[in-house]
Length: 306
Image 1: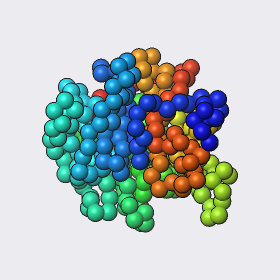
Image 2 (image 1 turned 45 degrees about the vertical axis):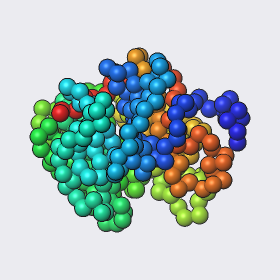
Image 3 (image 1 turned 90 degrees about the vertical axis):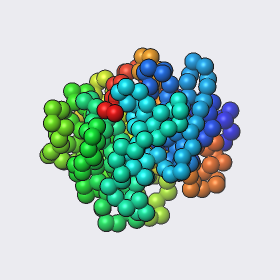
Image 4 (image 1 turned 30 degrees about the vertical axis):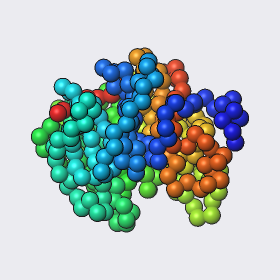
């Protein structure tokens, strides 16, 4: 399908930037008025400034799984080879913590700062079996394992009151809730929030709803989940009701964030890596960052402790 044919069919439109192999971890930087995101297998960090149209990228020797702005300046990058402070102005990386896993089989994946500035980041165990991935917390001086029994850690977000953490395992198609103690930065009482049907062998993708990937929360407390391979975003109420389904022009959305000054623009990263040739021909926007306007603003990005 051509771009001209796609435009009238979907709310989301692509940014005028190069495609990523697997775009992830978008966030809106309110001080810079710019959007950042990672291309994990492309080993790149991207920045786009809407007012000027300027796009910039930084290349690395290994994969950046997620990124967050840091109090005092710079970014925190969760990469296969550890947690790093990164200065976009100079390109300098400074190691904060070595990887708590074997980088030959595991890497950091989805990560975000909590409202108090502690950076939470999960891992992906690349062999997929057994479930050896985990969730870690960076307090500004120490990296600590906080939870496990997961294969592809994803979907981190906090409720609008900051007392509930969302966390998903993409492989098992499940989103969990955890009680979150803001003062202590601890989690407890992990329990299922939503379980989606697992992909069945031979099932056509058109009949598959996708699996929960990255997420964001809006100011009404709704959780926006990118459903990888489902060609949709879901807006989910705190009680688990699906409030809205947004159909997308690409098969594989990976994560959404809220941006622009009013936080009413939804920016959506997508993937094209290892997708079938016929799918890519029909979906030319695969790998691009999409954007669409929404009525309810999102919560602003949390800055991480340096």
